[in-house]
Amino acid sequence: MSVRRASEILVIRADASTAIGTGHVLRCVALAQEWQSADGQALFCMQRTGQSIVRRLESEGIDIAYTDTVPGSCGDAKELVELCRRVGAAALVIDGYQFGSDYQRIATEANIPTLCVDDHGHAGHYFTDFVLNQNTSVSALLYASREPYTQLLLGSDYALLRREFIQRGRIRRIQRARNHAVRLLVTMGGSDPGNFTSLVIAALGQLDCTNLEIRILVGGENPHIDALQQLRAQARFQICHNVSDVPGLLAWADLVVSAAGTTCWELAYLGVPMVLVAIADNQLGIASTLAERGIAIDVGWYADPTVMRTITKAVTRLIKDEALRCRMSEEGRKLIDGLGAARVVALLRRADARSLVGRPHGQ
Image (cartoon, rainbow, N blue to C red; front, side, top):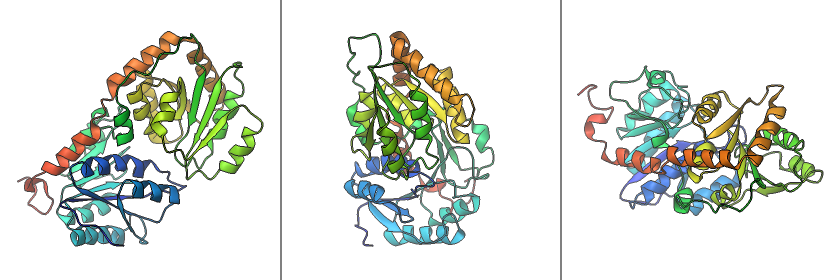
């Protein structure tokens, strides 16, 4: 692979696959876009991945360096350090649950400002210059075990929104002259290996709403597309597969049923009321906190035997309650200002020599 030289290169180590989803890569695209807006160049170091992700990165003018080394291994970390040195990287971002404490310690040997994007304190001890956790439920106690120089970037002020969401801006969506919502979107992640989308479709099949238009957002890495197409033949919904304008599709909806992952920040920014299903342990806190703030309805854990009935009841309530939808929309807009990626990149760019791990700690 030939890496195009630029005045400053941001190296990002993140993977995407059917098994782990696309969220790690896509939220880092927000950082890459912001870095490039200041005439820098972004380079993803990653395992080989699906063509939808490759095309997305290429469309952004982002270079890719593939690695065949075991993800998260010491060999992977050493290869990453060598890549950073070879291209003269100005900063490094690591995003993925496979990148533990030992990996971070080795990666910081690149002696450039290094950021770990995290969700639930998976590494135990943290060696990077910055740790970013954009979840509203996060506490600094989660990162009590870290180096003295490690700075914590916690909460929704650091929510990573891609440029296409920012460009859509904070313009209030057109209020339709009706008391009932009629446009519903379902999105359960970029790959949805557990096919939780079908669970939500089954729950929506119990709705007593003849005028409801339902669209199902299916990511390019979803392995269940054929099964979902078969379901579509028996139900009243449209499948939107690997769409290019995700912000437009989210904004189209009067309400959204979503996994409680990174899509929550995009929905909040756009002011879209949401019904949240937790499909991973680290999503439980997100769903409950957003519900407490009046931004979402939390229907709980996907495997709960009552979850389908709870989804149906929550959607029915939101369809009929225009005042509730308006309140949720306003609270979501208050939470996310869209400047998270800009804040993070500014910190990486101005990190001085005292923050680098190659220097004596505490000086």
